[in-house]
Length: 277
Image 1 (spheres, one colour):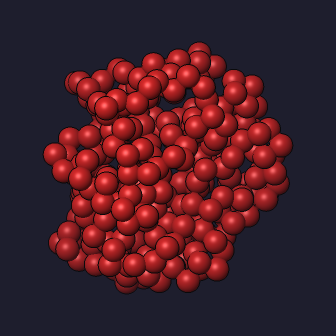
Image 2: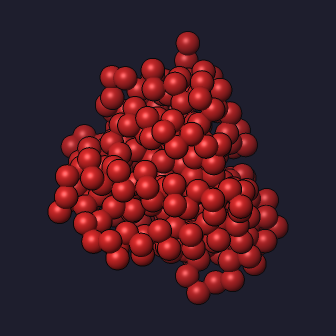
C-alpha cells in the first residue's frame, strides 16, 4: 500500500552538496527560512570553519544535523594509502562529534588496480579499524552501497545485500546501512533487503532524488524527484515498512541545477518532495 504524500517538512533533510553554490551559512539561513528541519553536511562545507560553532549555528536555526558526509574510501593496493584513509576516517568521526551529529555516511571506495574482493576485504578491515573511535564518539557508520557504474573507484559495495552482509559481519550497533534510491532502485531484491536491514536494526539513512533518462553524466546529472523513473514513493513504503521513521534526505548532484538560482531550486525541491516522496 502506497503511503500518503508528505504534506509537511518535518522529515525533510537536504544535503549541503545539493545546493553546492551556497556556503554552509547561506544554506543554513535559506533552508531554515523555508521550514526545512534537517541538513546533512558535506565535509568540504566545513573547510576553514570552527566545526563546533558551525554545529551551534545550525541548531540555532532549528536544523538538525542528520549526518556528516562522507567517510570511507578505504581500499588501496598501497598500504600507506590504506593507513591514510583510516586516519581520515578518524578525523571524520571527530568532525561529526564536534558538529553534533551521530551519523557518518560511508562511500566505501574501490581501487581498480586490484580485484573487487580485495577492495571489499579492505573496506571491512577499515571499518573495523575505526569502529572503536566511532563507539567512543557515539557516532554510527552507515555503509552506503553505490550503483555498479561506480564499482571501479567509488565503491566496491554495490547492492544492499552486500551492505547488509558487511554490516552483519561487523555485527556492531555502531555500523549499519544507508539506502539511496539513486543507487538501488534497479535491484529486484531491494524490498527484501530493505526489510532485512530493518529486521537487523541497521537501516540508518534514506536518500532520495531521481534517475533521469537519458542520464547525461554518470555523477552530476541527478534529477529532482518526479523528474525520472525511480518509484520513490514505493521505495519509501518499503523503508517505512521496515521501521524507518527518520529524515528523508534529498541528495542531488547536478551541474545543471548548480548553475540555476539556488533559491528557485530550493523551492522546487520542497514542491517535488511534497508531490513525489
